[in-house]
Image (cartoon, rainbow, N blue to C red; front, top):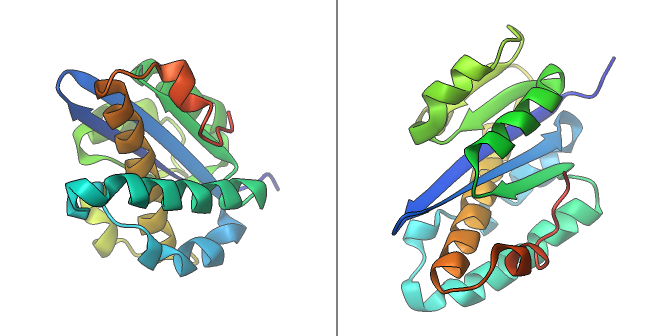
Length: 172
């Protein structure tokens, strides 16, 4: 049997800058993700003046997850089509894909495999799938949210995308 993944895609947009982030984890790594749920929050709940400390600490946690192979895919792009192509490459491995509400429709139409359950971010709390942890899914979408927002804020402040991406543990 091939690897089964849980994945999340988030979009961060402001001031004409859009950033997309896809993260995926092996379904067997749910416990580790669920245990980290309390460490992550939506960036809109983090005080503007505490964001740099928050991002720095969370990037360290994300690096650890990547090093331990709990996050097996981490893709960041300013181009939606990059995320589309990545999803198509791993579609046959995905069991559940949690998607930012704003891009739910185009991504749900993209998925052809009937076995893949595509869930809008706002509906995670209503999800009932045997063997799938809601906390793990929440953590995944928050990781995607945090990375997308971090990159977007860095771009708005004038940094180059290639420079920002070198600081992230990308796994394509």
